[in-house]
Image (cartoon, rainbow, N blue to C red; front, top):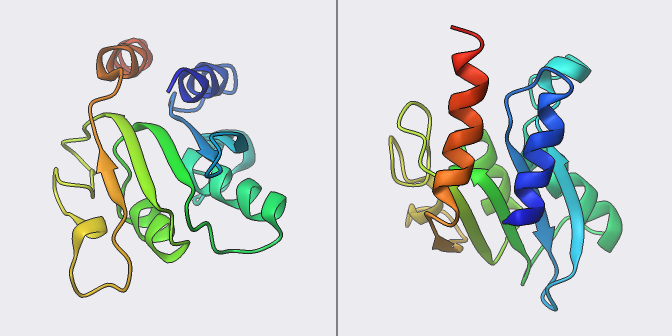
Length: 143
């Protein structure tokens, strides 16, 4: 989670919401890093999770991320939750819950939907105070 928090801090420099993510291979090595780049890249899909998943897939040379872990500072939205399910990520670890758009238990629970062909293990609340603090600092300056 500390690596994901580092990515989140880097997002601040580009004016993006401070959300960061990393993908770990089954041995625990970082194979993908991402931070929100929606503002910097003008990309509506430029969420930290999607950026990290894309880099991990390029690293492995395939789209299946079986056995990998996605670590992200904020509970994924519906798009990102769907992407990690479709990529067959084995485990999701996230920090803060997102009461406004969270799709891993807050508003929806995409990753545990029995109708889907894959359901990752979920670990939540890891370094949540640090992740929440970054977000609060960012939005305090915007409101």
